[in-house]
Amino acid sequence: MSIVVVGSVAYDGVETPHGKVERMLGGSCTYISLAASYFSKAKIVGVVGDDFADEDVALLKNHGVDIEGLERVPGKTFFWQGVYTPDMNDRTTLVTDLNVFADFEPKLPESYKDATYLFLGNIQPALQRNVRAQMKAPWVTGGDTMNYWISDFRDELLETLKGWNFVLLNDHEARQLSG
Image 1 (tube, one colour):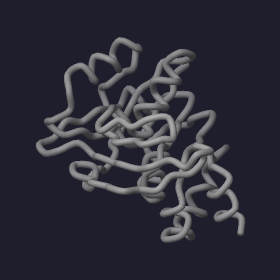
Image 2 (cartoon, helix red, strand yellow):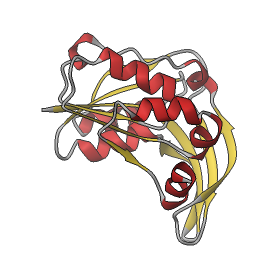
Image 3 (tube, rainbow, N blue to C red):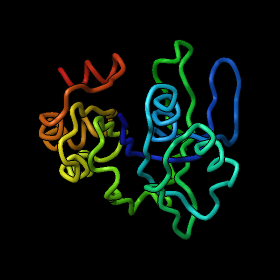
């Protein structure tokens, strides 16, 4: 049993009521694959720049995450910076530097296409749909989205969600999506 996780592998700058970190490993693909690695064989598809640290690659490998689908290209890794609200349920984005992530077109390695589970991290809905089409027949498909895709790509997102078994949203996103 394995799960393919597609999304951002990034660096984040995060401020919460509990502290602040200028630069740390982040991204939806990173967090989901590390969490999934405790229960299943996680296989990631993402893109990083040549500034992506060897110790972060080692962290993924040490958790048994298959990184065959992690593409390294010239340039800087995606960077996001934000401040979380006191209840930790919402955030204000301060910086979004897409860098190499701007041209991300997920391509699944052949060995990933038979996976049982597919999780599509917070990326453009058309890309999520394209990845789902590359899979042979996942038993469960789900993913994540956010306010930007809900407001600016609503029709595309609704079409994409038709191919999913579940979606993860916070309460603000759920209200926005449901109206």
